[in-house]
Image 1 (cartoon, rainbow over the protein chains, first blue to last red):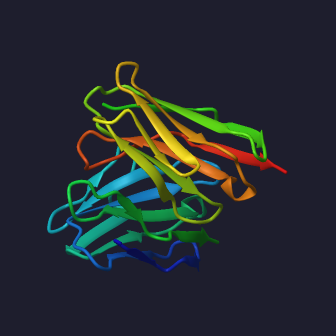
Image 2 (cartoon, chains in turn cyan, blue; image 1 turned 90 degrees about the vertical axis):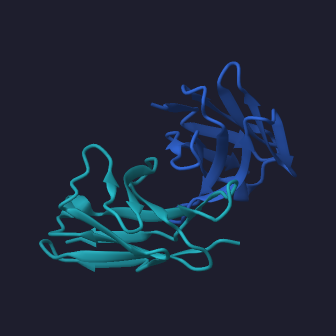
Length: 116
Length: 111
């Protein structure tokens, strides 16, 4: 079945630094990928929709200059948290629909970001 | 736009009993309704889904029902087991492009 790989699974960084998270579709092409943030005991919050070859679509309230998304190929999307602050500490998850009209949404394993 | 409401936020049932989680949606154009299970610190996993041309779908101990007229759908888990403990999310989609998520239900199975 379709597999979405996300890396790294966890990262600790200092305040003010930037962190890049990669999301890859391993056995299918994904023209669209989704980036979510999840705080403890809360639902998934869609941050942005990543579109291959074009600009990402950001949800209201999400700073596009802070959360840079690049979708340069059909199998790779990256999320860069720039100038990270402790309040950016969260669980970030990417996802993509598999190929085919009835394919479900597949998630990466998520990245636990801790900003100290 | 679409809005999905999920209830209850927490559900505690005795092992072996049934659990029911309910969701309502607002956009009558929605046609795809998946349910995801998320264990602590892990990614959501699809457990069952239903499309609007079907009223009910079952997979072993898990079933989903859809009432298009009332715009609600439910997850039913029978003969609950400890490993069913997790957070369950419902979602709705009309474009197969973006899912609108419910707030989640924490299911606790008491031994």
